[in-house]
Length: 326
Image (cartoon, rainbow, N blue to C red; front, side, top):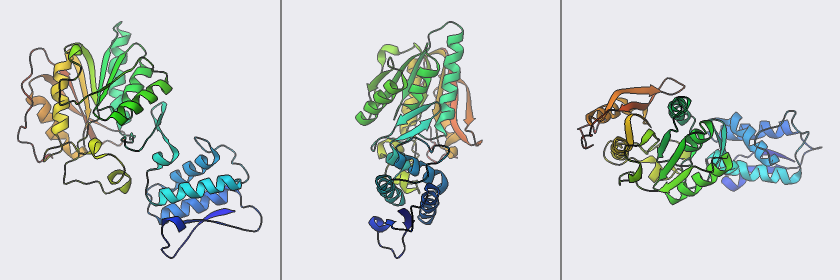
């Protein structure tokens, strides 16, 4: 039995078939067939996804070396179902049920934003700041606003054990998943709260926080994602930031960070590449931060704002006329 692509537009249920061949095709044959099918369907990373789906069929997180000689009939059936789902552009992470994030393996569920590799760089800035404060004998307090699946919060909690980490999200599904992922990572003291960053979340921590980190929704309403994996499967609540520029929720994050951070505390917040100047300007406009700068991801793209809390009160965070970020 092997998995082969079909032709003739017979629909997703017919996109993968099990066919009888002379003898039992080896696992490499299955892998080649899945790769070809995914490429034909327009999946952006057919080789990586094919390997992940074959590993999933084997009940493993990754392909073993060496590969098993052949798949069992049950494994072939499991692979066929998984490939059908991926051909329909369901996210790979939803199919296999997990995603790697820094040193962690996070559980992934439908209805919660899938963590992205570029956010690992945002997490690194928060980890470095918390680690530096811990090395100086401090127990840093770190708040992750709009925590999603909990990748940033769990990374800080496990990489900087001295840190006291609090994660907040508006989505009950995200709060539940962050709790699961934190426990699985061994970060059982990580506190997870249901809350809207546009409200006065965590009032008891105002002026006491060392790091506020966030990957908020920031997509403008007229910038609907092209990839079906994002457009059709990530929740709108985690994608669209509100307002004509998509920056209403990021503005709220900045305002809440200004209230939560102690003087000298660090803000790091992800944004879209084209929003770098607009986000720098809105952070600076509060008067609450110094050293406002743009940070890059591993590919050199402008993907985060970094700033330190200044002493003194913050100005209200409104719309400084930046509806057309550049």
